[in-house]
Length: 289
Image: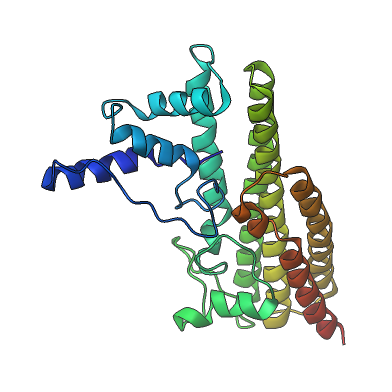
């Protein structure tokens, strides 16, 4: 489902029309991500493009919720009960917050796009080198860094990362279950129901993969920088194996999403996940010798 940007589009159009009231059209650029892609938060999805056309026509006075209702009716033929649209919209908002929280610590780790790195070295470069710093600043009151000079603080930092990532992954699973339950009772048309199911399963899987990737990376990095212990290597190994399992689940999901946008298959690239897992495994093997 789309990341709604209708209110943002409305504001931009009003700003443009305040300078030139004669504006009646807009040019939208599309790329490999396609207009149907919702996994890249800042792109225009089909729903947002539909809303843009309405705002430039007879729907200028409509709210985001009204425009979403129109799109659902025209695209899927869904005319729900009175409260269902508001609940539907709230799940889209909660989905985006959950998706964003997945990468909150990973803004530099995973660079500008919400994809996994393909190697340990790529992650290290993204995390440290591109900003020419020797520590990690996650936007909180305490810097996150690992050093042999203070193993206790380093361990506290590692524990904090693991706990926060586990919480987000658990929240994603819980939200997914609630969204699927809502769909069971909302009388979705078949096409919308199938899309909704696959979308939420995809969100939960992606959040789980990022949890394992981050825990594997930071545990390995801790072992290299602070303490190369059996327990650290074993935790890393467990999460690397979970990445391999997640890659297989990615492939299965892609096989079920026959009509997904090109961007979906790029985001759910099982080869990328396996490449990262192979790289982490290689680095882990080096620590054992």
